[in-house]
Length: 247
Image (tube, rainbow, N blue to C red; front, side, top):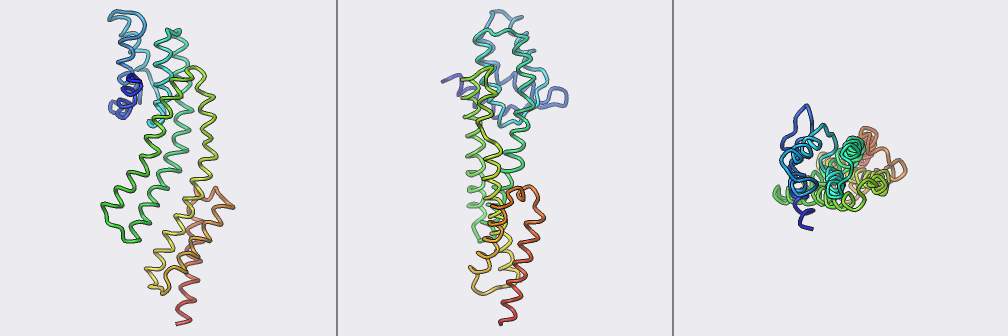
């Protein structure tokens, strides 16, 4: 437990020594250093060999590096074949990078930004918006790190199966649907302000509800913002025109 906590904390700065030659490689070796000192053969030369192995090129999403760290620390403690560890490490980087990019950069971070923007439009205080954004974003960020370290330590070489159970497409669809709703709420609120509409709840709910329905039926719209925004502006403009004509 103490080892996993140490790896988790150190993984937060895995990008601290990022460089164009090894990318995250040097950071991975630094995070694993306490484990490498206590695992395997004794002696300075053996430690240097283990460090060199883990300082090689490694490219993955930083939030999912604990998956690799957990698996690698287990393999080092078990005394697995060094060449097999090297091949496993090389093979693991690509999938972790793809999963992290799809789940965090393309889905979760935009959804959290939209949520913060909705709070801003609603008139929330800047400090409240900042705290809400950081809390929501890091809830998933830190949760992924804890999960990754646990499954990596548990499965070792078989960690690919655990990654498959993460169900990234399913999570992307669900978060994407919420993201489309947030787009609707944001554009609806902006339309209400721009046109100074009376009965603020009605146009806001109409725009948000329309976009939510479109997002539910066409979930991939979250990745293509323009159709959703165009629809929101059309509906908002229609509502604004109707209200003005009635007035």
